[in-house]
Length: 242
Image 1 (cartoon, rainbow, N blue to C red):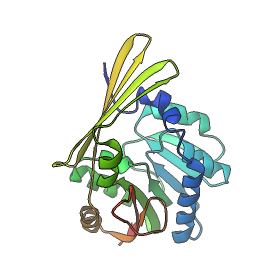
Image 2: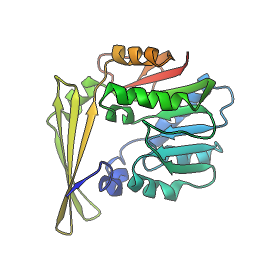
Image 3: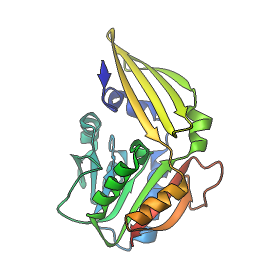
Image 4: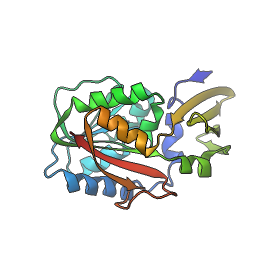
């Protein structure tokens, strides 16, 4: 059975990523937000997944909304959506909201899932509609270095919650496409998810942002305030409207 990305994966996603220090990651996002936005009142995460960041912002008394395309991931996030954290389903390439936000962010290589320039432009156009003059849109993109070092021809196996999982990765260097095949075997039934992402070079993103009337304020490396290096794993872009 072929499933949409983040369907079967949603059930084990947090367990597979339990090595990630979300508290440190959240602290960086919050610090970056306050660096550029004086008094953030409305915050939006695009591609919120299982809601770990939303829960932390809410815990610290920020009003935050989380949007994701995967209903299955939002079902997990629902348990964390309390106090000031609200979730809803939406497509990043085509969404409209009734108000504008002060700080918008999308992390953990969500933007790499838009493998066509036109789709990435559609995301920027949707985001633009919910930004104020001084709003900030921060997003990350995985680098080719990251893919070649940690994912190229890599295969990993897990057994979690009674599910046997095999995660295989490949990289089409010519077309800059990352292919991830996840197979799940539960109660004798086999299902498969195919994830496709694209590596974008910094100059490509700069041109896209300029075309869509975004101003690139800063580029950072790996959730720090350091410049991008050859061994950067995630490139962090900080933008506003031109």
